[in-house]
Length: 118
Image 1 (cartoon, helix red, strand yellow):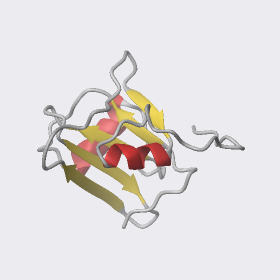
Image 2 (cartoon, rainbow, N blue to C red; image 1 turned 60 degrees about the vertical axis):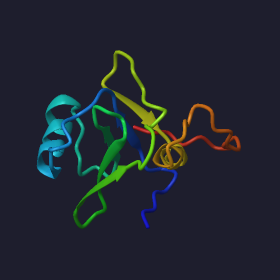
Image 3 (cartoon, rainbow, N blue to C red; image 1 turned 90 degrees about the vertical axis):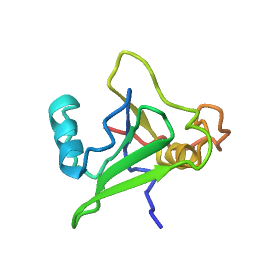
């Protein structure tokens, strides 16, 4: 079971990546294209061209994780598409995304103390 704190930054990469890419290529993409350090503790989320699979990479302090989820039916409904290369989500929104939902439509309890993400 993966667990992320509410202070864990989650970056969703716009567009799609080649899912033949492994951990090293995705980390290199983060460094070169996004100017992100993949070992910063942030979760970086990628999707494939058909929008039915996503990959997450993150560093837990002892090593890098590469996780993949492929939906049995359908596609991931939410994916940001704008001029920026990445969007920032909260960890609770990541959980909605992992279950195939749309975090924009989820109704969450209002945070009484906002967490500032980098």
